Image (cartoon, rainbow, N blue to C red; front, side, top):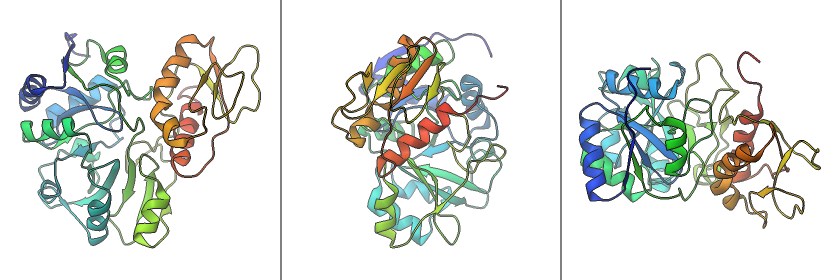
Amino acid sequence: MSEKLMTEIHKLDDKGIAKAAKLLRKGETVSFPTETVYGLGADATSDTAVAKIYEAKGRPSFNPLIVHVPNIKSVEKYAILSLMGQKLADTFWPGALTLVLKLKPNSKISKLVSAGLDTVAIRMPAHGGARDLLRASDLPIAAPSANASGKLSPSEALHVKQSLDGRIPLILDGGACAVGLESTIIDVSGDQPALLRPGGVAAEAIEAMLGCKLLRADTDDTAPKSPGMLSSHYAPVSKIRLNAEDVQNDETLIGFGNVKNANLNLSENGDTTEAAANLFRILHEADKIASGKIAISPIPNAGLGLAINDRLKRAAAPRPNE
């Protein structure tokens, strides 16, 4: 790490956005809220700026980043928007959907963003403050989740502060994220669309709109095509046991639905949308009170439950070197 920074928190208002935009244009990193999670942003066209993201997160250099843009017109500057990609963008943007597209020849997007691939992951956030920042900076912003690599994704400004304090200069505080779960990633760079990561837009809704099934991509620990494809990711300090029908004496139980002995509950009503919004906040809270072990009740593997289970499976996976 380079010299420790003073990390400031500013409100997501005109003054805060102006300060953040100035830092981004100077090649610095800034954390900002989206509807999914808080992102750690930098100028996606600058190798030096993007490298600061990797440095702050301690992120593997082979794990690609998502580029955030304010509108569809901005996409066309850097990538080739296929007919299928255009249909998805028209339906689900702005929103929690990321499209993997072919890079344009001589695209200005840093190769560090795409991890050397000939594709780039792009999305248009639904969060108005995020789009205000994109317009104010007049930059495509590369922004993974604003947390130390492999750790819990942040859905509140305080989570960012706890994870990256002293590593980044500024956090824009826009309150809790409405979705609280990363974007769905769809690869539309080839002939058949593929689900690379389930997320805030249900795969079933995408398949219904396209009128075809999505290919399912496998976990990739060597050269992932998009974020979120590493087998161990989104991990708390505590060890996690999934699909727990009971709880052991040394475990903290996270429930889903009517679980009477749960220490915390993702959704007492069994609502996967509510559970998705609460997921990382609850995991943060459980990690604080747990004695080293967390048990999690079964969650239906459909709709947003698919994305929740994907995150939990990666959180529960053996850590590197274990």
